[in-house]
Length: 124
Image (cartoon, rainbow, N blue to C red; front, side):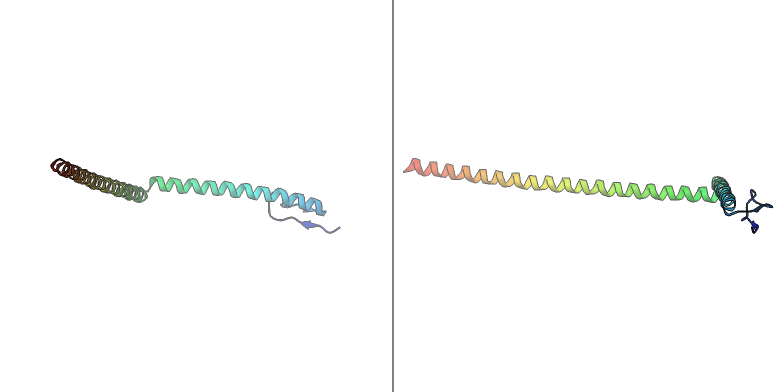
């Protein structure tokens, strides 16, 4: 049998695998250990970055400015919406006023015609 050394990893380091199954087993263990170490390293880097963000005054100032711009934009949208609703309300009130005046005018003309008819009927 040929002696094959395993891939990098501390489990098989310095040892030689004598068969294919043993090599696969050692490679599997080494792969899981590499994944675990990578996950730990990524978590450590994330923590380091979060600490930097928390301590750096430039980033704090940038975040505050971003929040302020976002709030101003939100308030501007609310103000525009409020003005639009107010304009719609005024337009609706104006339409109702015009409709009411037209109805009053028709009623006035109807009464006038009725009175005129009464006057014509009584004189005849």
